[in-house]
Image 1 (cartoon, rainbow, N blue to C red):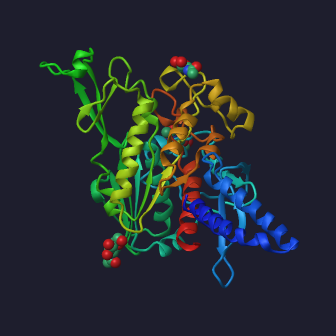
Image 2 (image 1 turned 45 degrees about the vertical axis):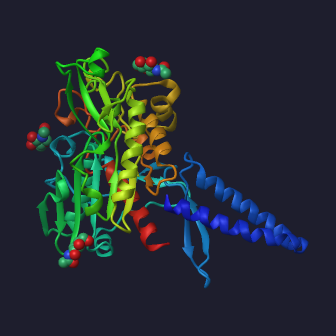
Image 3 (image 1 turned 90 degrees about the horizontal axis):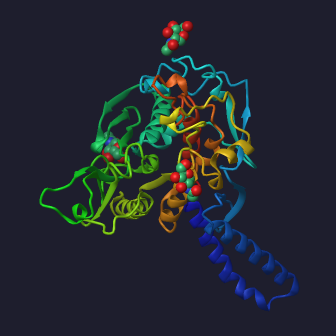
Length: 422
Ligand SMILES: *[C@@H]1O[C@H](CO)[C@@H](O)[C@H](O)[C@H]1NC(C)=O
Ligand SMILES: *[C@@H]1O[C@H](CO)[C@@H](O)[C@H](O)[C@H]1NC(C)=O
Ligand SMILES: *[C@@H]1O[C@H](CO)[C@@H](O)[C@H](O)[C@H]1NC(C)=O
């Protein structure tokens, strides 16, 4: 995170100062010791990918030296029930809400209760963002959501919130987007670029003339080009000022990419990778190439986010095995561990596994990480469940209004910190 990078930079500066301390009086060397300790703890928190601290700085003295105001880890907190919340930032009449996610219109029993839970990070607050203030601050800006339907869910939440504040919009499809809107009064555009794997992929079947994969016995599958971005978003880095990426669900989806009947077959430089690699290794390669592609192509001054994995909450089986999610309230911390702990290897184990791949790939890049996994792991109550109107329960997408509204509060808090506090 840039805020982390900033703190690292700050720490280095302090470290060089501290060498001159050694000749000073005892009192000063005590100060040195204290500052070394501060440097150490800053350094520690800035390099550990598992510590999601966002150190907040405020430029407060005349020399412009940042002062540590308050460390806030937005991912560490709890959901508090607040019955005084009377309205969501938008309602079920927003037309962008996909029918299966509209839990109020489909009469989900707790549909109106979902928004009465407020995320309270330990040690700070995560306020609801003010849409008018946001539009004013981000005039003439393009924001792109790039990813699967869970990023679309987040995009819809942002669109509906803004639409209620500023209703004059033009609907169009910028830069290969699946859907997009410009808020005309502010020349502010948001778009959703649909891509499941980030990389380009398509059906593959054996060539009658043979080939390396054919000689290994492959007949059908999906060709995934690890170094080629999906055409739906290849133009997004040069069009948008702010991008927010995700991928994950499709990498752990054997019902789509059956390891035997229709495996993922990875290609690099146009040639199959031999020996064939499993999906989790393919994911690492795709992330490496796509992160580097975005870093090369992004508009000058552009801001890039990678969103962490959105948790699913299937219990009693996977989505196609009768899995359900009938909670009326967020889970307790013990229930969260039961469901998501890697050592339990449960139905939704991919949640934290995907994040391990993301953190590894993003280390050293200048992407900001939007950590929404932890807060969302509690929200087993906030999926459409049987109200999704499908043959199976939907314990993957989120009811709208709902959890992704809070993701957007976090997203915009980070954006404001990046643009207006440094
Ligand atoms: C939800 O309830 C309303 C009012 O009772 C009813 O008109 C509507 O058809 C219901 N919708 C669904 C999807 O069941
Ligand atoms: C609207 O915003 C876009 C994207 O930043 C910019 O290229 C364009 O010049 C703006 N148009 C006007 C009329 O300001
Ligand atoms: C986790 O569970 C799946 C199926 O439920 C199984 O195929 C896999 O081998 C398990 N992995 C580990 C590490 O135990």
